[in-house]
Image (tube, rainbow, N blue to C red; front, side, top):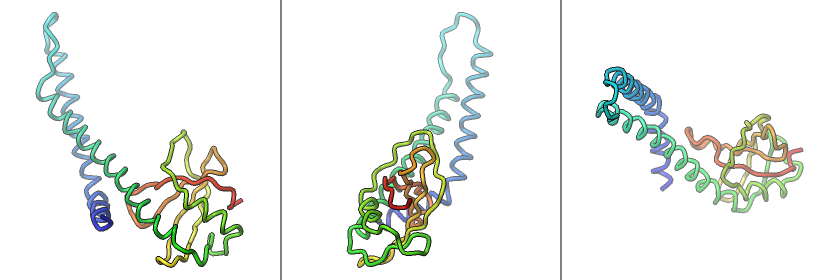
Length: 174
């Protein structure tokens, strides 16, 4: 499973710009077909969408939903890859290169990564957290939420396309 997730990550990283271009072209075709259809339709005729509107519209939606689905899949795969190392015995925790001031509280918070619930905010201050575990080293980026000061967005550099892999709540970095 991890190899498949990394393959999907590499594929999306390469193909996503092209897929977005194709989606925009399909949207333009569908929009143009709808506009021309409305303009050419005589008054009183039933509204029936043209196949030139329907098929590009379906293609556009399929591409967009595939990209979004891929991002959700990669976030779950990244969390699944990180969890075994977080749950292993941790010998050292560093924050921005210095020993963590409250390592147990930070580790307990990291072990409880949950899916992100968006609330019209964005990440701000970045903390680079390095853990040395029995399963190998792990590096995470924690970025403080702009509206909830003890909430941190967790980023895992092991995947290119997995945006944030979740959030943790802690005051161990204050």
